[in-house]
Length: 275
Image (cartoon, rainbow, N blue to C red):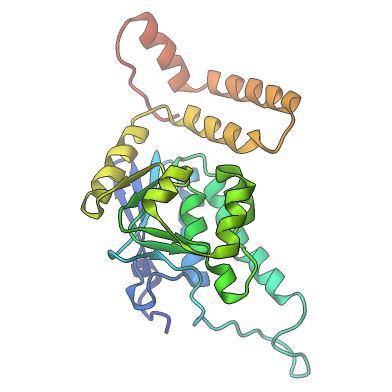
């Protein structure tokens, strides 16, 4: 059953200096996400992009076995409809997805603030894509990624068919989709799905080190670099030329860009402000 705990205890938020930690803490359902929890992750990311409280985000979970197995299927989906209309009609699943998970993944992909996934255990289905949508992925050595959909007779969702081909190519993606096998963290790293695999006891330490290094850097330039990378496989060369020129112009007027030039001229280390 879904937890009765307050939402801010199920999806915890911690600000550690300039690093924001979003922590899935739902051990009673193996860290599966129901709509309120999924939406809280989305809203926290969107709010951080506006408030500028943080300059890097770490997305992780509690426990040593499960990062996120996907959606919490115990959550009720009752609708307020007239008595003569069925609770389930054609179009319901599509609308639920458009209003639900397809608002979370754009929030991650379009975040100006870099996001690190610190994957502490099995990540399956939507849970796997939750990690893979992040900019960097650090995985504990006991982690497994599972494209579980074929085991349930389901079609991949949560942007898996968009994310995976861009990271590992079409052939490898189809292999994972068709066989739905457990993919150990070390193999995921060799395929390029994971940046680094570490012993489970060192996961938080490594995520902290990377996040703090990013948070101390030129945040505007990082956000624009992320935007360019995300655009790169979807546009033609001429459009990319204009995108790069636009990104360079936008960054030129940031204080960090001016600080970078000044520190170079003055032969000193830059002091990045994040704007």
